[in-house]
Image (cartoon, rainbow, N blue to C red; front, side, top):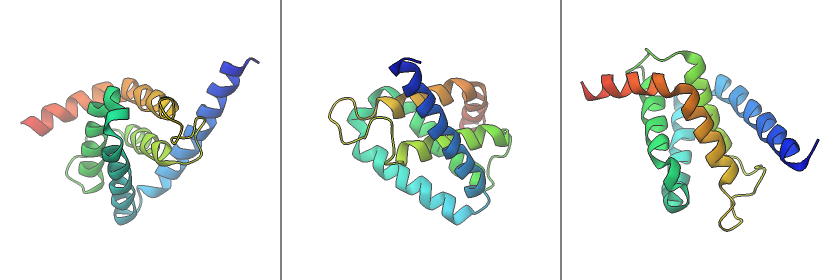
Length: 133
């Protein structure tokens, strides 16, 4: 296995762990909202570095909050777990590339956020229609 394959496998394993954490977390509304607040703070503090996924992040926060607070439940639970899992991965200090490394520190986070966005895109589109109605 080459370095890229090894790196992608590590990202996949870490993301799988984040989804497991998300699955447990969504059972507790208060803890989930605190985790979302923490992720939102980190995202806001690093908005410039996250420019290419900023719109995804805003949708992720919005749909997650509406789901957790019972306002919107039309999204499959698996999609919410993937979204919150991506946000937990984003928060994790145990990244493939540590966030404090200038310029490249958020590459793996952006990769995971973009991957999840592509997986749940249709759910997010339906959510946006509901939200704007």
